[in-house]
Image 1 (cartoon, rainbow, N blue to C red):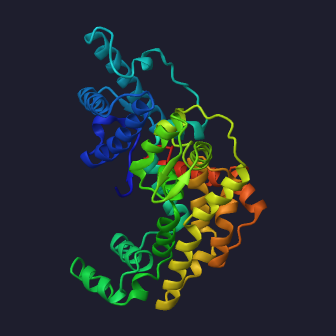
Image 2 (spheres, one colour):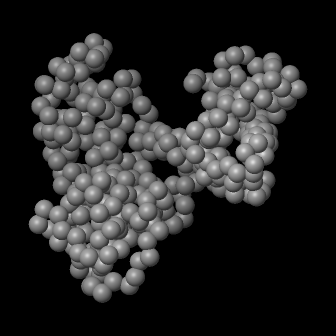
Length: 368
């Protein structure tokens, strides 16, 4: 979006580029604000468009006094639109509980982030903060890294294929994969699995088979796939460990009972099914064979990013330690219990991310 400074004053004094940049941020905030109150996507889009039209019509009367007050004004505009819509629908509208909700007018900064920032925006900032600065042609270089280091494609074939997409792309694989950000993101993509993907990998099934697993648990029946059998209690432990914390999953709503199996045995079985060690070894060995510098993996950046994301998903920091200590050691990084405790329990990573987002949002009135 570029660096655009918005001066205090009437909104109508903003240039088209300034207002476009301002509304781009505003629409993300409003979308998250409405999504948190259970509005469907189409309703959110309609309300945001209506808010834009109302604010644009009143731009000569609106003072811009910085982002916090601007966002509050836009949210109040949406509040009024919601009430108007509810009245026109006879008092019924998806997200009806929103009408009885009084937002906290003085939230802490981290609480405000959770309500106003979309998860993909947080992820982008976290990537930049811990994985490194994006090099030129990052996306195509990242694609090359994934194809070569994760998928195991021949480097020469990949380079020939991608050369058709970009004539400026270096013809040397080392030059393409030498940036810290590219290498870190390849490793991150190789060993970060979303909650349901993680559960499916442990069970040896495709993610779209998880509903069948939930049905088996509900019926207190075992589940078998490709000759591998899991008892209902074992399935409960796997889902608790791997994806019970996924807020979009019906699994979270299940009534888990105390299992009648040895939990430690199931934990060992889960650990043996995890792909992290295998993937890290594959990526590391492929990099060494090609002469690619693997020093970025010896630094803390990619491991901070993984620790933040997995614990944000709901994994305990003890599980993270158990699952990633050996893979990290394989590429030369030591995950120390005290360091991990400081990262997660003492909220050092959350604090770093909050500071970076606050800097980017330039709460004194600047937009970057």
